[in-house]
Image (cartoon, rainbow, N blue to C red):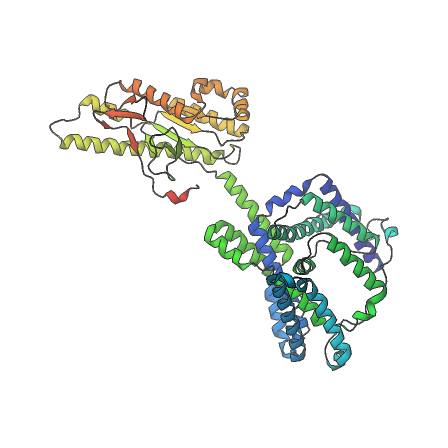
Length: 552
């Protein structure tokens, strides 16, 4: 047993140093993978688990503890025949009193002190009632004897890592798992309260704080510790505003351990249960689940997995599952970037998503699209597939337009479409230019460069030309250093989409025979037009299916 105690102290020391190293390296950024949905689901699920674990003190039954809700409920049902109505009445009264004082303190400013006074008042009331009416002798369970004094100093146990049971290397997986899971649990509740009270949280500083806490604990016979969920909830519900509250709490605990432990021996256990339950109730946020379901189904899925996983798989497992799902969704979003077809807003030089703006104008012979993400190895395949798909869609739509015009010519015997006009229309059923707006592309790796090079080579074989619009400085460096810019042609790399479209339409006009049907003309004061007689033939509007599939 002494060896295991020594081992626990050494692990606490190692966890402390691990946290400090991680904090010094500013690795707190890993908490970005704890999305709001993950944190909300986790804190709500953990709050329910912690609250249910205190039910035994309210019902007066010896419930076997568990971190899984279904097992916990099953254990309660097994021993429910030992239900004690006296303990239940006392515990329920304490919960009611705490919630009442908290409500009054929040509602009426002049009674705000009641919020912080609640736990202390309930504790004092429980002890006084037990002493006056000898409740402990009438079946009301109390805390009992509490060892007094400060734990012994244990720095001397830091040497001899492993305590003769395991080697230092064998402890590394345990230390890392404790550090990671402990930090995630601690930062989850910290971020939830930071959002609730609108203040900034420095995750790397939290790592340093946890490291110092574990090192200090290892000096006084402590096992590894992290931010307590239930105590944080109680601290929050009593109205604590800063870290000073922790210093005051620690000082009072030290005084109690040194001088006042006999005073708390007759405190009913239902008081502790009521304080914890009333504290964690404020962290159950089911309304957030309803909000996410209404606004963003994917975030709701993450919330639901985090919430249910925490309740039914355990706090640590639930958190790991939720974070894992968040990472998978990040990878999915990264591998399948938003890549819309764009069109020109009437009367402007602005090009926007044609699903979002169904009246945006597109042009036969051109595919215009925008890549809304960095181009790197994970999403190159999807980008290639979407560009190929858009090319086929553009040719299909142009074919349908030509068929409609041919049918119109057959019906109109007074002005039938000539062979030359039909050839001109046929020319526009083929895509000749792929115009890619690269304004949102912040980064491109070698896989992305190879993608563009392969697509350019394929387009050249089929008589198509790729045009790139507004790549940023970093992307331009990669295009030139790889030689791709010269292969595409610097005259096909533009500052904006409108310039690219104008040049492409001019080139299409020249190749299609100038004044033949579908020729390109330009109104110096208005939008570009492709005229056939008095009506616009090739300048056409397409109305995609569902505009709700896109982002605003």
